[in-house]
Structure formats: C-alpha cells, structure tokens
Length: 171
Image (cartoon, rainbow, N blue to C red):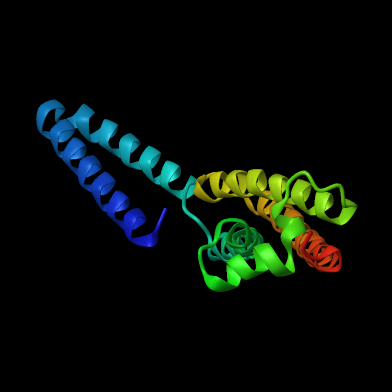
C-alpha cells in the first residue's frame, strides 16, 4: 500500500472511530464512555500491529530492487522473443536465434528457460509478500537473501544462454 493510501486509510479509520465514540457516549452515557475507552485502546493496538517500521520499509525497498533486477532480465528475454524493434528482430534472427527456439537442446539455454519460468513464479510470490501488511523483518531478510541469489543465478544463466546461442548462430 502506498504511503498516501495508508494515510487516507488511517484518516478514514480515525474518523469512523471518533464517530463511534461520540455515538456511544451520547446514547449510553457512562457505559458508553467505558466502551469508548476500550474501543480506542483496541484500535490503537491494532494500528500499531500493522504500522510499518522504517526498517521494514527499507527492507521492502531492498526486496523491490532485487525483484526489479529479476524482472529486468525477464523483460530483456521477452523483448528478445517478442520485441518489434529492429534490434530485437536482429537478435532473434541473426545473433541469438537459439534463444527464441524453445525446443533447443542446449543445456545452458534450457537452464536459463527453467530459471526464467521459476523467476516469473517467484516474482508473483514476492509481489504478494510486498502487499501483505503482516510480513515481519525475519521473513523479509530471508526473502531478500533468496531474491538476491535468484537474481544473480538468473543473470549468470542469461549470460551463459546468450553466449551459447551466439556460438550456435543462425541455422
């Protein structure tokens, strides 16, 4: 959730709680006052549970960077396969035609294709973790470690697949 959306949600929740407190006090008088205090305490405890610390926000930014590294490699591959630019067509037909052929039996290319498929699923899972308000610091640390490792391995596999495809050349 963006900071502006989070601020809007907090303002709306605060206004709703304030309206509820006023209604409880006006309708129930003294018991309404006690219920209002309990309601305010409950809302504050829940609000603190879902409030992100600067450390968690920083770790989420790091995870987004690792996710973006993976997405950039996948975008390069997608551009090679489906791009309409002159460079993409030249790469697909002249420089790296083996990368555009999913039936190629070159180990380096197959390894990249497997890692790319896995990376797409991983990105979807990372996105769901980034949207979740209850992800804590240890989970983010593990995710960052895994995302960095996957980004590195995908980059190495991409480089090796491109090298192998260049060696094979056009058919």
